[in-house]
Length: 442
Ligand SMILES: Cc1cc2nc3c(=O)[nH]c(=O)nc-3n(C[C@H](O)[C@H](O)[C@H](O)COP(=O)(O)OP(=O)(O)OC[C@H]3O[C@@H](n4cnc5c(N)ncnc54)[C@H](O)[C@@H]3O)c2cc1C
Ligand SMILES: NC(=O)c1ccc[n+]([C@@H]2O[C@H](COP(=O)([O-])OP(=O)(O)OC[C@H]3O[C@@H](n4cnc5c(N)ncnc54)[C@H](O)[C@@H]3O)[C@@H](O)[C@H]2O)c1
Image (cartoon, rainbow, N blue to C red; front, side, top):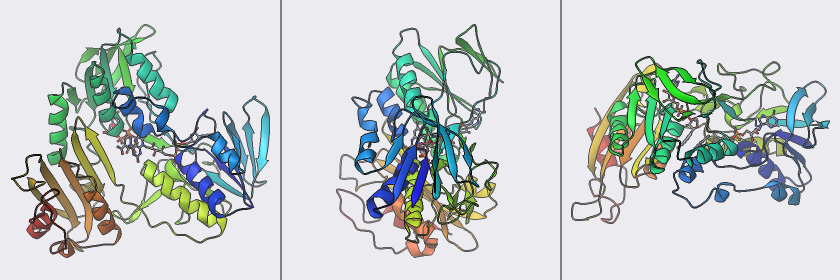
């Protein structure tokens, strides 16, 4: 069996490793247009903000690792088209020569691309995106210039908030814009985002929410940002208004979701029996929504690659869906969420209630201690938990895994009320905030 994988970042790598490590004798070919593989974009802001010493550790594998395992790998090789009937992939290799690879099974792992704000001046110099390693390096390089004093970040989602922090850490004036009235509006309810917004402001980031960029001005380089409310002098712009699926190669042939992502089943198989799609290029099943959706996250990319690899290798393995669990840590303020916020539930016509609680993480006699705010969201009719959010200066990140499992397994809010949660003053309180929030539920 010969499997060709297009795209060798997190999803393609997971599919390749699953096949190579578990199914000897399978022929695996990886093709990617970039110069590198396995870049953890999640570390870009840490590097740009100088919270880590270098970017080298942001790669977790390389071309040689795959060659050692017996795979064929082509980097700097762009796939131009796929003959789905003849099962042949056409690409231009590193030397620019047109070449082909035939396949028995094909894995599309072509990921996502940043959404480009389609406004006048969008092609001026000094306007950046933050997806590829090279783009992260370009942002880093630009910030090293003394001439870059004011940075405008468009989009206060995960990338925008993280890079705004990094730019501030590099001593820049930072203006953060979003169409929504708060930061992180797709992940958290306002009672949580208002805390992150206060945190950003406290650290000197200028917030411009509910404000839409309408034009970038400048001669060859951007010098001004115009919005629907005002104009601002800027030296650099970073666009971070979300990703869309990169499904250019198969869109004509395969069934797709409303944003163009390849529609896949629980084996990651597309509408073509020989073709699988994984990671940001594909749809994913949300257990909170109980529907197919699109969530671009590295964690989903890895899991979906593993599922595809096993099914191609011959082990039937059903994906179990996701909750879209996510987290962020900005100037020491941590927020994690899973499933649906109250706002996201309303947007999806799911009738929910929620229960909030706030307390110190540890008993009052422990000095190093911070307040934790928790919200658990549950469906009114079934009482199943559909979401949770936590915010604190404490490391509350591991709590969210339990809520992720609760959503996956349709646990009701009532089941949480007397759940056995251990107590040790070093970590938590006997009246645990999870218990207290659940007991407070209507
Ligand atoms: C700045 C940043 C921070 C992030 N932080 C987090 C985080 O903290 N946690 C988290 O879970 N997720 C995070 N993400 C999201 C995560 O990086 C993506 O969800 C993940 O990269 C998706 O992996 P993928 O392999 O599906 O796609 P991609 O990473 O998009 O990779 C697709 C690959 O396909 C190749 N390709 C595309 N078209 C072709 C073609 N025609 N021919 C050949 N090759 C092609 C590309 O070169 C690329 O290497 C972050 C993303 C960014 C940009
Ligand atoms: N910590 C993490 O887990 C992490 C970090 C970075 C990225 N990611 C993932 O990578 C993907 C891309 O991240 P992202 O930050 O680009 O997307 P995002 O969806 O997190 O945020 C996009 C933001 O842009 C805003 N927006 C949309 N159109 C706009 C417009 N025209 N003008 C102003 N604002 C606009 C939205 O309201 C939203 O707040 C997401 O799936 C994200 O979850 C995750």
